[in-house]
Length: 143
Image (cartoon, rainbow, N blue to C red; front, side):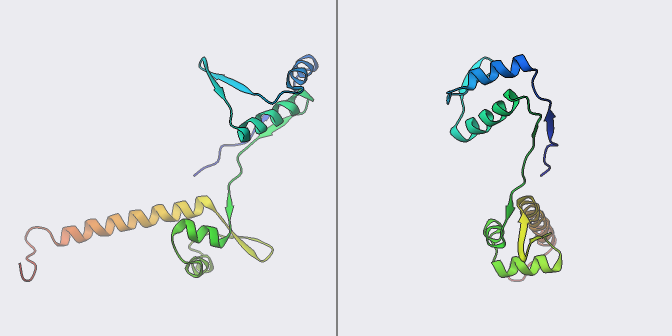
C-alpha cells in the first residue's frame, strides 16, 4: 500500500488570497462541484478543506500528504486476527517490521495488511497443492 507523494502548492497571489479569505469568513458550509455534481462535504473533510483554504488565503505555501496509520501491537494483533503475544514474537523474529516510540512498538497498518495478503496466498497455494495430491489416479484408502 504505497502512499502518494506529498504535493506542495505555493501561496496564492495577494488578490486571490484576500478574495478567498473574504469568502471563508464566517462560513461553515463548503460545497464542492465534481463534474457538475454538487457534493456537500462531511464535517471531517470540510474541516480539512477549510484549513487548507485558510492557509492558502494567508499566502502560505501548503503541503498535502497522507499519514500512514501506526498501530499499537494490540491494534495490529486484532486487525490480523492473532494473539498479541504471537504478533510480538513475529516482530522479534523480524517477520513483521516494527518501529519503536520510546519503548513502545508501533506497526504500520500497511505491514499488517501485507502480512495478511501473504498468509492468504500461502493458504491458497497449500489448498491447490492438497487438491492436486488428492486428484485422479490417487486412490484414497477406503474409497
